[in-house]
Length: 557
Image (cartoon, rainbow, N blue to C red; front, side):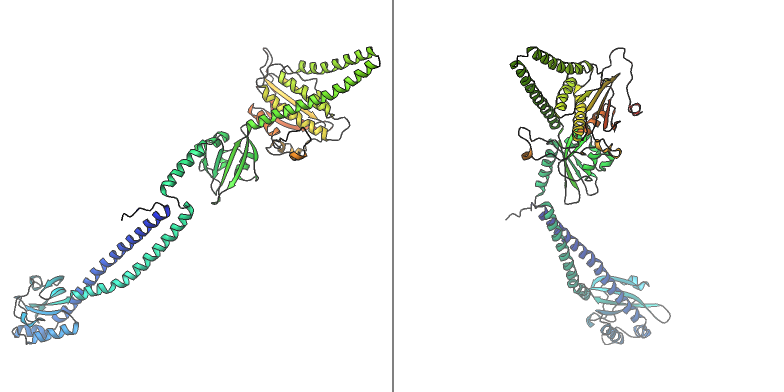
């Protein structure tokens, strides 16, 4: 039966760790037993050498070797056997200078020549070795035997049975194997715990699945039209997909760095780093309106998703413009109805001359107001915006005045940007003037050209802006207005649409900064606020006009 290779990550890791642990234990056991065997051999040879040295140091043995003949019942054999039995040696052999044995465990070997060469010992050297002789393999030692004058008259050879050395080695194996088995069990248990933890982290997927998941993840992250930014637990960027890089102006070098290092300070940075909490948070980055959501991850990091809401914001502003136009038409319809009722009454009363004068007066007043705006503001989009806002302002009881200093030639580079700026400023001014109790509320608008620079100023008679809030009101998401009503609370005919608070003035400042200009708010004499926006290079200066671009510093003076 074919053994299949495990596919799961934890199973492969467990198998690899068990195999590695087993191999390490076998290697460690072998490395332990190899020097132990050599150490036991050395100890046996040292023991044999010690016995041989002690035997050779006996002066009676040297005298008996010199005065007697080799005999199984002789004194040399008797002394050698006594020493052998006392020390537990395998043999104690005494030989003369010719290599003839004078003692041996087997008496039949006495008088015969030794089986190994004794020349090195008879030359005065001590010998230790593991060798095989007539009694089998043994650890042996040979020392020269000298007489009283120090002359070599023979040698003493002592052997320790190698079976006993081998037995000692085998005797250590059970203990070694027990320790090795215990270590192996601990290693396998640790590998099992690690594999189970890995199984929880990898959700039991296989290596091939991980590779496929990573490929799918890369394709998904870089293919979706939603920005994704991932942070680690230290706040460093781990991942920026293509859409997030486009929306935030980041590149591949942002990975591994803190967001504060690659993105300018502001609300966008605060939202992405989590310093501002909430869902569907609005932020403005590079003129784009973004909706951000931050979700923490189990490892202490976070993932932030970004949606580009710029087009939706533009559509919302177009809807606001449409709604404003509808309000203006509704106001005009109401006004025209009253005027028609008056005209009908004059005709029924037979006062035809008075009716003619009334129609002439009404028509002339409306035409004069529209013509006055058209004469001062030549761009059709801006003049249409002012006419429509004037009708809305009249319905709300807040007259919209056009400053006598207003003069904007038909030379606007991008009228849509100026419409966005002026529309936001007028909406805020009308809300402020209408919401503040005053006997004669009004809003005044001034548009003028300074060479290629457009200067927009909108003042109102509202409550004004305290000095401590004059910078905060331009921050994304910051607003003094109440939250929008629920759809069920809206009056009939009003759309349930709301783009979120705190975006209008932020867009105004971003547009001004894009042109290299500025946007600021100051106090109006007599109460209220004055918003001033300077847009350099927003106009095409007429030929021969002096270049008197109004800078932020000059305007502040």
